[in-house]
Amino acid sequence: MKPILALIDILIFAFIASIHFYWAFGGRRWSKLAVPTSSGSQQKPLFTPGPLSTMAVGIGLLCFAWILTLKVGFINSSLLSDSTITFISVGIAIIFFLRAIGEFNYVGFFKKIKQTEFGQTDTLYYSPLCLLISFIILVINYY
Image (cartoon, rainbow, N blue to C red; front, side):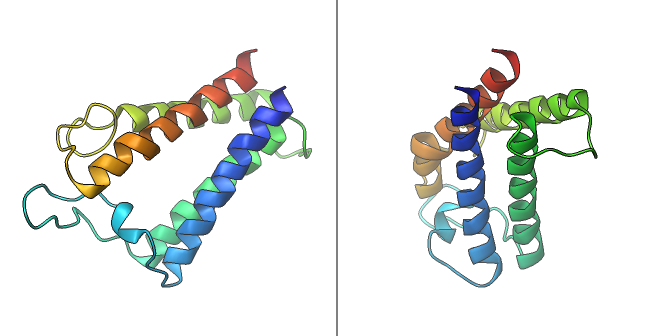
């Protein structure tokens, strides 16, 4: 069961990373749904990520996938001990759990600004997905 759960998260990370690489190389599809926006009649992005930061997020997501492949034994590495891999993977779970909770304004389940296009997409897809990712990683580590 653990390998199947890990594969789910690995594929999610790889898919989201590929979207980030697409954006980093100039793609625009779905980009308006990726960044929180201000409320009001003119919803403006709160920040504009550049290609390097977008690429860094994609690489980070691939690193998360790599840690999970190590955790369940799809690949072996002498670089990291089992306890280090567990520590890192639990850290990843915490990151995604905190992302699901959010920062109470624009992102996460407890955000105040919910009526923007990003806010609605976040409530329906992003925050639940982050919670699922976190849950799967914890199950992989502790059950």
